[in-house]
Image 1: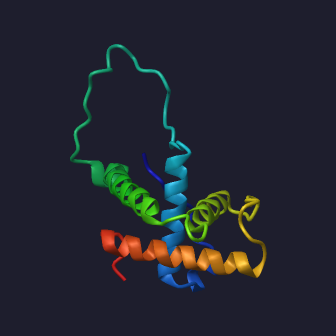
Image 2: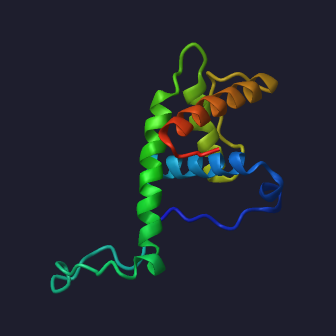
Length: 143
């Protein structure tokens, strides 16, 4: 499962690299939670080739190594998200909607339980800081 994204936009290049990396991790986490899979080829399997195992010496070229690294990051991200509480404030909910909006590329998803306007921005900032602390503890973010 490869979670590749298009090249960063010009606005992302001027942002803090930690914030950009956190956005990427949130998008990967959301795609993983929704069951997104990059599909290649046909869905079925031919009976003659079903038991074939591909050698791994070309994994650096075909993206399989990156897919395994992404999988490890997603697992660490999932564990970190579980450590972000939803009490006393709705940090987990704010991060889930932030991840969904980042994955869709637009601010189209909102929650009736989250505040609006500037208060929502503060809540998302607090939630991102909490998540960043958990990711640092897990060794995903080394900043």
